[in-house]
Image 1: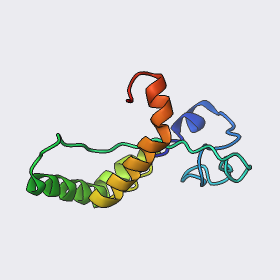
Image 2: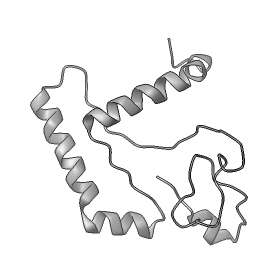
Image 3: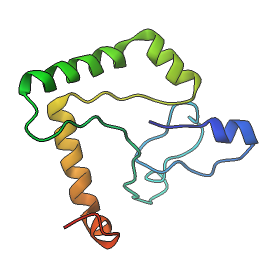
Image 4: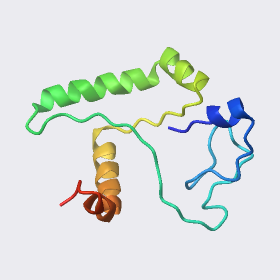
Length: 115
């Protein structure tokens, strides 16, 4: 999810957005990768269930999340708050999370959250 509200509300002039690509609402602002700075930072929100949760329950939660992400009213409200939405299904999110965890393992260990 990206947010440009702070830029708009406070009259700030952004120099770049951190990431691989430009963001909706700030199309004229280059991404750091375009500027030759490969800064792999993302902000994301995901839903997790306790280990051992029944597959049927996990599938139902994933289906509800997908339905919400496709809901026109939900998308409109997020858009009005300058938030983008990218839904990842169960397998795609699991792969994404594992890559994020591996990429941040040293930082997590440094701050006492990793093994």
